[in-house]
Length: 222
Image (cartoon, rainbow, N blue to C red):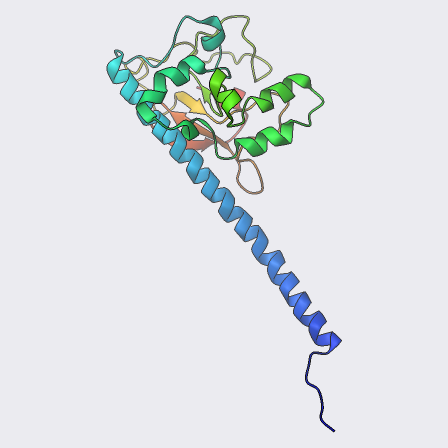
């Protein structure tokens, strides 16, 4: 009598168990690899924006973009249409103005019970409506700091250098002075890349380098 070949139930279960173990090992590795790619893209965005800003200063007596409009220049968060209008000709790429993970940050905070946080989160998406009014996915730190301006920190940091950034004025410590960064807000526990093991707020400094700042923005801002 001819015997049929095939797998027994135990053999199939063993194969399934091995596949499950491999998946449990590899999926976190793939997730970290994707996040590292997003972090690299974000750093590249900030560096290219930094190059555009330095080019701008060469045309405007070493002054970084700033203006008189109290809505556009009071603080470092959205809307930033005037800033976009000033810098876009130097970079010519809309996607540079949005962090690669800002959509995930926005989606996470859209479910907040605080309407102000929901409005803030929705302003971060890279879409035509936000782009039209100058809502971007980064903060910019050359601003007039009106006394009634809202603060994403929840409180105004004391002893910090606010106002228009001037290249020659800040040349003593350019590696410490913030120029742009990932977005953040008081009451939102995450930065765009603060998932898994990837921690820190991405910061573009006035000398053009980018690195992750560890700690609360209110404590480390310069």
